[in-house]
Amino acid sequence: MQELLQLIDQHKKDIESFDTSKSNAAESFRIKYLGTKGIVKNIMQEMKNVPNEKKKEAGQLLNGFKLMVEEKYEILKQLSAGNQQSSGEISDFTLPGDDITIGTRHPLSLVRNRIISIFSRLGFVLAEGPEIEDDWHNFTSMNMPENHPARDMQDTFYIQKNPDWLLRTHTSSVQARVMEKQKPPIRIICPGRVYRNETVSARAHCFFHQVEGLYVDENVSFADLKQTLYFFVKEMFGNDVKIRFRPSYFPFTEPSAEMDIDCLICHGKGCNVCKHTGWVEILGSGMVNPNVLQNFNIDPEKYTGFAFGMGIERICQLRYRVNDLRLYSQDDVRFLKQFAGVIN
Ligand code: DAH
Image 1 (cartoon, protein in one colour):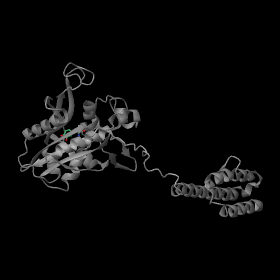
Image 2 (cartoon, rainbow, N blue to C red; image 1 turned 45 degrees about the vertical axis):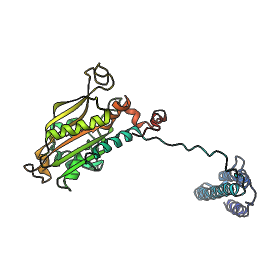
Image 3 (cartoon, helix red, strand yellow; image 1 turned 135 degrees about the vertical axis):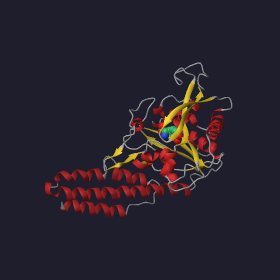
Image 4 (cartoon, rainbow, N blue to C red; image 1 turned 90 degrees about the vertical axis):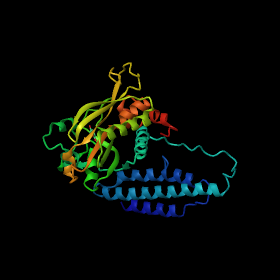
Protein backbone atom coordinates (compact mmCIF):
# COMPACT_ATOMS: atom_id res chain seq x y z
CA MET A 1 0.00 0.00 0.00
CA GLN A 2 2.81 2.31 0.98
CA GLU A 3 4.51 1.56 -2.31
CA LEU A 4 1.37 2.35 -4.23
CA LEU A 5 1.12 5.72 -2.51
CA GLN A 6 4.68 6.57 -3.39
CA LEU A 7 4.19 5.46 -6.96
CA ILE A 8 1.16 7.66 -7.42
CA ASP A 9 2.92 10.63 -5.84
CA GLN A 10 5.82 10.19 -8.18
CA HIS A 11 3.52 10.08 -11.22
CA LYS A 12 1.67 13.17 -10.08
CA LYS A 13 4.93 15.07 -9.93
CA ASP A 14 5.86 13.83 -13.41
CA ILE A 15 2.51 14.97 -14.75
CA GLU A 16 2.99 18.44 -13.31
CA SER A 17 6.32 18.78 -15.07
CA PHE A 18 5.07 17.21 -18.31
CA ASP A 19 6.35 19.19 -21.32
CA THR A 20 3.22 20.77 -22.78
CA SER A 21 4.98 22.99 -25.29
CA LYS A 22 5.18 20.46 -28.12
CA SER A 23 2.47 20.47 -30.74
CA ASN A 24 1.72 16.78 -30.15
CA ALA A 25 1.75 17.10 -26.36
CA ALA A 26 -1.85 15.92 -25.95
CA GLU A 27 -1.32 12.80 -28.02
CA SER A 28 1.96 11.81 -26.39
CA PHE A 29 0.38 12.39 -22.97
CA ARG A 30 -2.50 10.12 -23.94
CA ILE A 31 -0.19 7.36 -25.08
CA LYS A 32 2.04 7.61 -22.04
CA TYR A 33 -0.74 7.67 -19.42
CA LEU A 34 -3.96 6.44 -20.95
CA GLY A 35 -2.79 4.12 -23.72
CA THR A 36 -3.27 0.34 -23.59
CA LYS A 37 0.24 -0.03 -22.19
CA GLY A 38 0.07 3.27 -20.36
CA ILE A 39 0.79 4.13 -16.76
CA VAL A 40 -2.81 4.18 -15.57
CA LYS A 41 -3.41 0.62 -16.80
CA ASN A 42 -0.14 -0.40 -15.26
CA ILE A 43 -0.82 0.86 -11.82
CA MET A 44 -4.35 -0.50 -11.86
CA GLN A 45 -2.68 -3.88 -12.00
CA GLU A 46 -1.00 -3.13 -8.68
CA MET A 47 -4.39 -3.61 -7.06
CA LYS A 48 -3.90 -7.35 -6.97
CA ASN A 49 -0.96 -6.93 -4.60
CA VAL A 50 -2.96 -4.83 -2.14
CA PRO A 51 -4.25 -6.78 0.87
CA ASN A 52 -8.03 -7.21 0.99
CA GLU A 53 -8.70 -4.87 3.88
CA LYS A 54 -6.91 -2.03 2.05
CA LYS A 55 -8.55 -2.62 -1.33
CA LYS A 56 -11.27 -0.05 -0.84
CA GLU A 57 -8.88 2.72 0.11
CA ALA A 58 -6.50 1.80 -2.70
CA GLY A 59 -9.36 1.75 -5.20
CA GLN A 60 -10.34 5.30 -4.26
CA LEU A 61 -6.77 6.47 -4.59
CA LEU A 62 -6.38 4.92 -8.00
CA ASN A 63 -9.65 6.34 -9.23
CA GLY A 64 -8.66 9.78 -8.04
CA PHE A 65 -5.41 9.45 -9.93
CA LYS A 66 -7.18 8.30 -13.08
CA LEU A 67 -9.54 11.27 -12.94
CA MET A 68 -6.63 13.64 -12.54
CA VAL A 69 -4.94 12.16 -15.60
CA GLU A 70 -8.11 12.42 -17.65
CA GLU A 71 -8.63 16.03 -16.66
CA LYS A 72 -5.09 16.91 -17.61
CA TYR A 73 -5.58 15.21 -20.97
CA GLU A 74 -8.74 17.25 -21.65
CA ILE A 75 -6.85 20.45 -20.89
CA LEU A 76 -4.01 19.48 -23.19
CA LYS A 77 -6.45 18.68 -25.98
CA GLN A 78 -8.07 22.08 -25.67
CA LEU A 79 -4.70 23.79 -25.57
CA SER A 80 -3.54 22.05 -28.69
CA ALA A 81 -6.77 22.94 -30.54
CA GLY A 82 -6.19 26.58 -29.57
CA ASN A 83 -2.54 26.41 -30.61
CA GLN A 84 -3.43 25.06 -34.01
CA GLN A 85 -5.66 28.03 -34.66
CA SER A 86 -3.30 30.67 -33.39
CA SER A 87 -0.31 29.11 -35.12
CA GLY A 88 -2.09 29.80 -38.38
CA GLU A 89 -2.66 26.23 -39.47
CA ILE A 90 -6.24 27.19 -40.43
CA SER A 91 -5.56 30.38 -42.22
CA ASP A 92 -7.26 30.19 -45.60
CA PHE A 93 -10.42 32.13 -45.05
CA THR A 94 -11.50 31.65 -48.64
CA LEU A 95 -12.10 27.92 -48.06
CA PRO A 96 -15.77 26.96 -48.06
CA GLY A 97 -17.18 26.78 -44.54
CA ASP A 98 -18.35 23.65 -42.76
CA ASP A 99 -21.87 22.57 -43.54
CA ILE A 100 -24.37 23.75 -41.00
CA THR A 101 -26.99 21.06 -40.56
CA ILE A 102 -30.32 22.64 -39.93
CA GLY A 103 -32.68 20.59 -37.82
CA THR A 104 -36.29 20.09 -38.77
CA ARG A 105 -39.41 20.88 -36.86
CA HIS A 106 -41.31 17.88 -35.61
CA PRO A 107 -44.51 17.41 -37.66
CA LEU A 108 -46.62 17.71 -34.52
CA SER A 109 -44.99 21.07 -33.76
CA LEU A 110 -45.64 22.21 -37.31
CA VAL A 111 -49.32 21.38 -37.04
CA ARG A 112 -49.65 22.77 -33.52
CA ASN A 113 -48.10 26.07 -34.59
CA ARG A 114 -50.40 26.27 -37.56
CA ILE A 115 -53.47 25.63 -35.41
CA ILE A 116 -52.38 28.32 -32.95
CA SER A 117 -51.77 30.80 -35.73
CA ILE A 118 -55.19 30.18 -37.32
CA PHE A 119 -57.06 30.66 -34.07
CA SER A 120 -54.98 33.61 -33.00
CA ARG A 121 -56.27 35.42 -36.08
CA LEU A 122 -59.73 35.05 -34.54
CA GLY A 123 -58.56 36.53 -31.25
CA PHE A 124 -57.87 33.30 -29.34
CA VAL A 125 -54.93 33.57 -26.96
CA LEU A 126 -52.60 30.81 -25.83
CA ALA A 127 -53.17 29.16 -22.44
CA GLU A 128 -51.39 26.25 -20.84
CA GLY A 129 -51.88 23.96 -17.86
CA PRO A 130 -49.95 21.20 -16.07
CA GLU A 131 -49.68 17.64 -17.40
CA ILE A 132 -49.87 16.27 -13.86
CA GLU A 133 -53.37 17.26 -12.85
CA ASP A 134 -55.72 16.68 -9.99
CA ASP A 135 -59.11 15.02 -10.15
CA TRP A 136 -61.00 18.31 -9.83
CA HIS A 137 -59.47 20.03 -12.84
CA ASN A 138 -59.39 16.98 -15.09
CA PHE A 139 -62.73 15.38 -14.24
CA THR A 140 -64.99 16.69 -11.49
CA SER A 141 -65.12 20.36 -12.46
CA MET A 142 -65.67 19.30 -16.06
CA ASN A 143 -68.98 17.79 -14.96
CA MET A 144 -67.53 14.29 -14.69
CA PRO A 145 -67.89 13.48 -10.99
CA GLU A 146 -66.52 10.30 -9.44
CA ASN A 147 -68.23 7.20 -10.86
CA HIS A 148 -69.44 9.08 -13.95
CA PRO A 149 -69.51 6.50 -16.77
CA ALA A 150 -67.70 8.89 -19.16
CA ARG A 151 -64.57 8.44 -17.06
CA ASP A 152 -64.32 4.88 -18.38
CA MET A 153 -63.23 6.09 -21.77
CA GLN A 154 -60.40 8.11 -20.29
CA ASP A 155 -58.48 5.75 -18.04
CA THR A 156 -55.09 7.20 -17.19
CA PHE A 157 -52.04 6.85 -14.96
CA TYR A 158 -52.36 7.68 -11.28
CA ILE A 159 -49.66 8.58 -8.83
CA GLN A 160 -49.53 6.10 -5.95
CA LYS A 161 -48.31 8.65 -3.43
CA ASN A 162 -51.39 10.76 -3.96
CA PRO A 163 -54.36 9.13 -5.70
CA ASP A 164 -55.83 12.56 -6.35
CA TRP A 165 -53.08 13.20 -8.88
CA LEU A 166 -53.15 11.84 -12.40
CA LEU A 167 -51.72 12.45 -15.84
CA ARG A 168 -54.30 14.61 -17.56
CA THR A 169 -56.48 12.76 -20.04
CA HIS A 170 -57.41 15.80 -22.10
CA THR A 171 -56.62 19.47 -22.46
CA SER A 172 -60.14 20.30 -21.25
CA SER A 173 -58.48 20.60 -17.83
CA VAL A 174 -56.94 23.85 -19.05
CA GLN A 175 -60.48 25.25 -19.41
CA ALA A 176 -60.81 24.72 -15.67
CA ARG A 177 -57.41 26.25 -14.93
CA VAL A 178 -58.31 29.39 -16.87
CA MET A 179 -61.91 29.80 -15.70
CA GLU A 180 -60.88 29.62 -12.04
CA LYS A 181 -58.62 32.64 -12.54
CA GLN A 182 -60.24 34.67 -15.27
CA LYS A 183 -63.75 35.95 -15.82
CA PRO A 184 -65.39 36.31 -19.27
CA PRO A 185 -64.74 37.27 -21.96
CA ILE A 186 -62.46 34.25 -22.32
CA ARG A 187 -61.12 33.14 -25.68
CA ILE A 188 -58.30 30.63 -25.37
CA ILE A 189 -56.51 27.98 -27.34
CA CYS A 190 -54.63 25.35 -25.30
CA PRO A 191 -52.23 22.90 -26.94
CA GLY A 192 -50.58 20.16 -24.93
CA ARG A 193 -49.75 16.56 -24.26
CA VAL A 194 -52.34 14.23 -22.77
CA TYR A 195 -52.22 10.64 -21.51
CA ARG A 196 -54.42 7.54 -21.65
CA ASN A 197 -53.93 4.06 -20.31
CA GLU A 198 -53.96 2.40 -23.73
CA THR A 199 -51.87 -0.31 -25.32
CA VAL A 200 -49.55 1.26 -27.87
CA SER A 201 -50.36 0.41 -31.50
CA ALA A 202 -50.55 2.17 -34.86
CA ARG A 203 -53.91 3.68 -33.87
CA ALA A 204 -53.61 4.23 -30.11
CA HIS A 205 -50.89 5.52 -27.83
CA CYS A 206 -50.45 6.09 -24.12
CA PHE A 207 -49.77 9.73 -24.84
CA PHE A 208 -50.78 12.07 -27.63
CA HIS A 209 -51.47 15.74 -28.20
CA GLN A 210 -54.58 17.85 -28.22
CA VAL A 211 -55.64 21.41 -28.73
CA GLU A 212 -58.53 22.74 -26.71
CA GLY A 213 -60.50 25.86 -27.53
CA LEU A 214 -62.84 27.79 -25.25
CA TYR A 215 -64.87 30.91 -25.88
CA VAL A 216 -67.09 32.30 -23.13
CA ASP A 217 -68.85 35.63 -23.38
CA GLU A 218 -72.32 37.13 -23.58
CA ASN A 219 -74.38 35.87 -26.53
CA VAL A 220 -72.02 33.18 -27.78
CA SER A 221 -74.10 30.77 -29.86
CA PHE A 222 -73.83 27.48 -31.69
CA ALA A 223 -73.66 29.47 -34.91
CA ASP A 224 -70.42 31.05 -33.64
CA LEU A 225 -69.06 27.60 -32.90
CA LYS A 226 -69.84 26.34 -36.39
CA GLN A 227 -68.48 29.39 -38.13
CA THR A 228 -65.27 29.36 -36.10
CA LEU A 229 -64.59 25.69 -36.80
CA TYR A 230 -65.49 26.05 -40.45
CA PHE A 231 -62.98 28.90 -40.75
CA PHE A 232 -60.40 26.71 -39.05
CA VAL A 233 -60.75 23.72 -41.39
CA LYS A 234 -60.69 25.90 -44.49
CA GLU A 235 -57.48 27.53 -43.31
CA MET A 236 -56.01 24.17 -42.39
CA PHE A 237 -57.09 22.04 -45.35
CA GLY A 238 -58.16 24.43 -48.09
CA ASN A 239 -61.41 25.96 -49.32
CA ASP A 240 -62.84 22.80 -50.85
CA VAL A 241 -63.09 20.89 -47.62
CA LYS A 242 -66.59 19.84 -46.55
CA ILE A 243 -67.71 19.55 -42.96
CA ARG A 244 -70.54 17.87 -41.12
CA PHE A 245 -71.64 17.92 -37.50
CA ARG A 246 -72.97 14.83 -35.76
CA PRO A 247 -74.80 15.00 -32.43
CA SER A 248 -72.67 13.53 -29.67
CA TYR A 249 -72.24 13.49 -25.92
CA PHE A 250 -69.61 15.07 -23.69
CA PRO A 251 -70.31 15.78 -20.03
CA PHE A 252 -68.81 19.28 -20.26
CA THR A 253 -70.90 20.46 -23.22
CA GLU A 254 -74.62 20.55 -23.92
CA PRO A 255 -75.53 20.17 -26.72
CA SER A 256 -72.44 18.39 -28.04
CA ALA A 257 -71.32 17.57 -31.54
CA GLU A 258 -68.49 15.83 -33.30
CA MET A 259 -67.21 17.39 -36.44
CA ASP A 260 -66.14 15.40 -39.50
CA ILE A 261 -64.44 16.55 -42.66
CA ASP A 262 -64.60 14.72 -45.96
CA CYS A 263 -61.73 12.28 -46.28
CA LEU A 264 -58.80 14.08 -47.88
CA ILE A 265 -57.08 10.81 -48.59
CA CYS A 266 -59.68 9.09 -50.80
CA HIS A 267 -62.00 12.08 -51.44
CA GLY A 268 -65.05 10.12 -50.44
CA LYS A 269 -64.26 6.95 -52.36
CA GLY A 270 -63.59 5.01 -49.20
CA CYS A 271 -60.27 4.02 -47.61
CA ASN A 272 -58.81 2.71 -44.36
CA VAL A 273 -58.42 6.15 -42.85
CA CYS A 274 -62.13 7.00 -43.19
CA LYS A 275 -63.14 3.38 -42.57
CA HIS A 276 -64.86 3.48 -45.97
CA THR A 277 -67.34 6.16 -44.93
CA GLY A 278 -65.79 9.08 -46.81
CA TRP A 279 -65.76 11.13 -43.58
CA VAL A 280 -63.12 11.54 -40.88
CA GLU A 281 -63.85 12.74 -37.37
CA ILE A 282 -61.52 15.53 -36.36
CA LEU A 283 -62.88 17.03 -33.18
CA GLY A 284 -65.42 17.10 -30.38
CA SER A 285 -67.26 20.28 -29.52
CA GLY A 286 -70.33 21.82 -27.99
CA MET A 287 -71.84 24.59 -25.93
CA VAL A 288 -70.25 24.77 -22.49
CA ASN A 289 -72.47 22.96 -20.01
CA PRO A 290 -73.99 25.45 -17.51
CA ASN A 291 -72.80 23.20 -14.65
CA VAL A 292 -69.22 23.79 -15.75
CA LEU A 293 -69.69 27.57 -15.79
CA GLN A 294 -71.28 27.40 -12.34
CA ASN A 295 -68.32 25.44 -11.00
CA PHE A 296 -66.26 28.56 -11.65
CA ASN A 297 -68.84 31.09 -10.47
CA ILE A 298 -69.63 32.23 -13.98
CA ASP A 299 -73.32 33.05 -14.25
CA PRO A 300 -74.83 30.76 -16.96
CA GLU A 301 -77.83 33.09 -17.26
CA LYS A 302 -75.55 35.87 -18.39
CA TYR A 303 -72.76 34.02 -20.19
CA THR A 304 -72.68 31.22 -22.72
CA GLY A 305 -69.74 29.62 -24.41
CA PHE A 306 -68.51 27.00 -26.79
CA ALA A 307 -65.60 24.58 -26.49
CA PHE A 308 -63.86 22.12 -28.73
CA GLY A 309 -60.99 19.66 -28.52
CA MET A 310 -59.03 18.02 -31.29
CA GLY A 311 -56.14 15.57 -31.55
CA ILE A 312 -53.07 17.04 -33.21
CA GLU A 313 -51.96 13.60 -34.44
CA ARG A 314 -55.21 13.22 -36.36
CA ILE A 315 -54.81 16.59 -38.10
CA CYS A 316 -51.22 15.64 -38.86
CA GLN A 317 -52.35 12.32 -40.31
CA LEU A 318 -54.64 14.11 -42.73
CA ARG A 319 -52.19 16.85 -43.60
CA TYR A 320 -49.05 14.79 -43.99
CA ARG A 321 -50.52 11.29 -44.44
CA VAL A 322 -48.82 9.80 -41.41
CA ASN A 323 -50.58 6.53 -40.71
CA ASP A 324 -48.83 5.14 -37.67
CA LEU A 325 -49.01 6.98 -34.36
CA ARG A 326 -45.81 5.38 -33.14
CA LEU A 327 -43.76 7.26 -35.71
CA TYR A 328 -44.28 10.51 -33.82
CA SER A 329 -42.35 9.39 -30.78
CA GLN A 330 -39.75 7.01 -32.19
CA ASP A 331 -37.30 9.76 -33.15
CA ASP A 332 -36.44 7.97 -36.39
CA VAL A 333 -34.50 10.47 -38.50
CA ARG A 334 -35.71 8.84 -41.72
CA PHE A 335 -39.19 9.95 -40.73
CA LEU A 336 -38.26 13.30 -39.24
CA LYS A 337 -36.04 14.50 -42.06
CA GLN A 338 -38.93 14.30 -44.51
CA PHE A 339 -40.15 17.49 -42.85
CA ALA A 340 -36.92 19.37 -43.58
CA GLY A 341 -37.67 22.82 -44.85
CA VAL A 342 -41.41 22.59 -44.09
CA ILE A 343 -42.40 25.82 -42.47
CA ASN A 344 -45.97 25.04 -41.63
N1 DAH B 1 -61.96 16.36 -24.07
C1 DAH B 1 -62.54 15.58 -25.16
C2 DAH B 1 -61.71 14.32 -25.33
O1 DAH B 1 -60.57 14.28 -24.97
C3 DAH B 1 -62.56 16.39 -26.44
C4 DAH B 1 -63.54 17.51 -26.38
C5 DAH B 1 -64.83 17.29 -26.77
C6 DAH B 1 -63.17 18.75 -25.88
C7 DAH B 1 -65.78 18.30 -26.72
C8 DAH B 1 -64.12 19.79 -25.83
C9 DAH B 1 -65.41 19.53 -26.25
O2 DAH B 1 -63.83 21.00 -25.37
O3 DAH B 1 -66.31 20.55 -26.20
O4 DAH B 1 -62.21 13.37 -25.85
